[in-house]
Image (cartoon, rainbow, N blue to C red; front, side, top):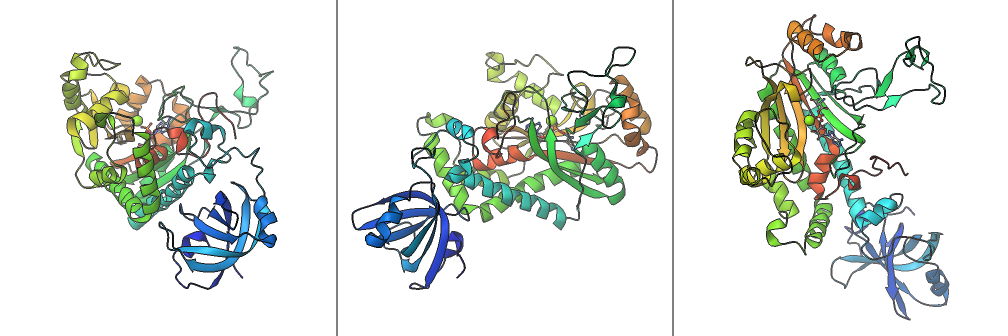
Length: 479
Ligand code: 4AD
Ligand code: MG
């Protein structure tokens, strides 16, 4: 007989039928005569209750069963008399597939801190919180592919090892096979990358955008969904050194089309989560409420599901960077110098405290800021006629700050060429990118969504390290 997964089993109603169920023990409790095992196999957040009559046959096997053990149970499906679920399994036989010594197994049937669980990342999938997040991650990957596929976008694999710095921020991890204890140097004392694996310097990519642009200028509508790497030393709750980014890029469109696409996509995937991740979201909602019990009422976040509905039910606020600076300059926290970075004037880069002020306090909804100063944005953004700003757009979310960064791209060869000169970007690194502006150039635009920031928002978790299975952050590379 085949195993029934717990998700399907909990929906069965043919009481009395024989079933086999396998999973990991969450808890075992009971009395002299009867034992109750809560079993979970990851197919759902819900456990199935296994009821075992304690007799000569089962006593020994029950002795080997502790939290974390893997077991296989065959028995009868029975209507449950307990509250919370409609079915349970009365065991006929139980096999222990893998024991978990309670003196060694670190996860106990009690609440563990997230910090503790980060040190046990190899086992934290076995908790409700982390299995819920894993299932939601999967559903969101699927929803994103579905969103773009349904709209005729082609998924492009952009390279992971590159020779260029797409964002020009110089925050790259170098890839090399040169011996670090004896690096070959040229006559000028510089590292001789001619002897390196690729015959030139190589890095892990910070973005798939430049390659996506090449594809968009032939296929019209494309997107990448890949790992990206940033060696920025930011130890915050919103930065990872390795994260996943979704980057759509489309030809024959401008920044308005870009904002519309981004807003539609965010609303679509949030709606998809509300429809398809109900059990996991209600668990995470209770978890968040529990975490915030001791906070003052005004410091608590909105209830998770209410927050998700709130975001999809209204248009995002759209305004320019210049308008935002005016609001921030006149804001209470700025005047009272309560911002860590006080906004002095036009040109300042916005910090997450400013972004969150605009979203959470001023507009009380997601915000799209456009037309940033060229000086704080990447070289490829389309230059506005004012000579100061570029056609950038960032989407700011409650609790997160920037969730999406995008722009219309500079399609004019001469303007782009002038800009890369000003910014000292080596032409020999991006000659291929420049050629697209020589041959059949057209207006085009795109954006990047940080996948983990999306998951952070959807799950109500407070730290990005908890929404990716194995976070990579400065001084942290366990597992
Ligand atoms: O704003 P960014 O740097 O934009 C780009 O990389 C463009 N090439 C995108 C494009 O236009 N195709 O990054 C895009 C998004 C950010 O808005 C943020 O959500 C996320 O990527 N992100 C990070 N997420 C986690 N950890 C980090 N260190 C991140 N840096 C950026
Ligand atoms: Mg950005």
